[in-house]
Amino acid sequence: MFRRKHHSQDVQDNDAVHREAKINELKASIGPLSGRSLEFCDDACLRRYLEARNWNVDKAKKMLEETLKWRSTYKPEDIRWHEVASEGETGKVYRANFQDRKGRTVLVLRPGKQNTSSHDNQLRHFVYLIENAILNLPEGQEQMAWLIDFSGWSLNLSVPMKTARETINILQNHYPERLAVAFLYNPPRIFETFWKDSCSEEKMDQERCIIYL
Image (cartoon, rainbow, N blue to C red; front, side, top):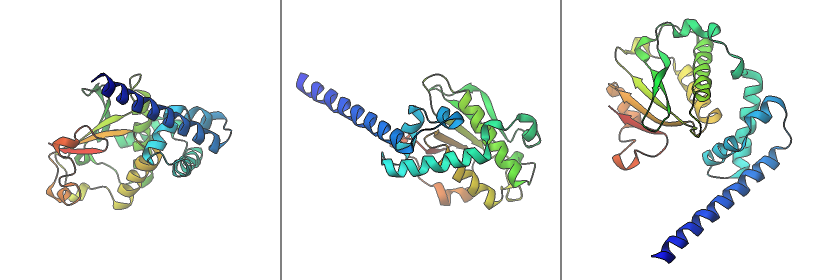
């Protein structure tokens, strides 16, 4: 029993050393940074990009460089509430004033409250809320949870496909490993085509899990 525990600890230690080496390798490969890019690319950030690319340094580097380019032009940290306030008037997306059981920030999304048709403003509103949710993560917590309430939703209120695709692109490619779980409340049956059985009980602790309520 002792040797088994000792072996398990050795494996964990080796994994930690290996991952630390990967982080340092990625850090060296992207070269010197300055300003906001330097602040953004801390060790936790590098770890998330490596995890998103299965610890492949070259793939993680490409992903991270694309994010740095995007952030330098989109400037998500400079978006202010008054610039996107009109998008939030109906409460279609907001940060909840509570955390989930694991201490994660919760974003509430209510597609049935859609009130605008501006592609650019909808994306900026979304990015603002993601940035705000990250800023309000408790110490030691890197992920958030989503609660998507489809009450009152109809096809007439659906987000244009272009906006939906860009939203997914931003989340997956520029905020990797940030979404831990998404709870879908009262989802339309149309969504079953895409997400049916996407999360079994055995997967409930895995990332990017979608749970029907």
